[in-house]
Image 1 (cartoon, rainbow, N blue to C red):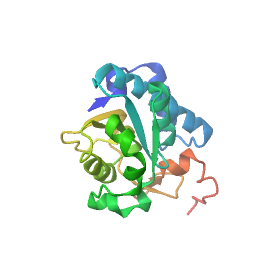
Image 2: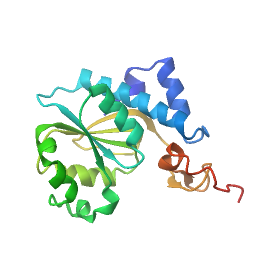
Image 3: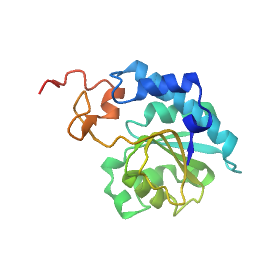
Length: 199
C-alpha cells in the first residue's frame, strides 16, 4: 500500500486529515473540499509511483467517494465513471453482464482503472467490484481517503491518504459511540444535520 501521509507528510496534509476525521464535527462543503484536495494529492502520488501505458479513468463508488474521486480525476484530467453498486446485485456474483460494465466497457478496457472510495473498512464491497472488473481488464488499482489498518489488500495495488485503527459501523449518529460512528457520506452531504444524538 502507498499511503500519502506516510510518504509525503506535511502540515497541509495533516490539516486536511484533521478536517476529515470522524470526530472533527466537520460536515458539508468544508469536508468535501478537504476530500477533494486530498484526492488531488493522491492523484499526484499515483502519477509519480504507478507506471502504465494506458490513460487513467476513475470509477467512483457512490456516494461517499465523489469528492475524493473527483479530486483524483481532476488532477489526472481523466474520465470519471459513477458506480452505484448497491442497486446491482450482480457485483456479488462477479457477473460482467451488469449495466455499468455494458455502458462503460470501452473506457474500462482502454484505461488504467482507479476504483475510488472514501473509506475501505473490510474491503468486501470494493473487492467484489475489483474481482468482477479484473475479468475484463488487468490494470486496476484501489484508492481511498481512509483505509482501515486491518484491511488486507492481497496482491492489489492500493493508494490511500491514511491508515486508521478506528473500527465502527457508519450510522446516523453525530459522534462515535458503542461501535457506531457518523457515516462518511452523511457527513459529506450534510444529511446528519437533523439527527438527535442526545440519546
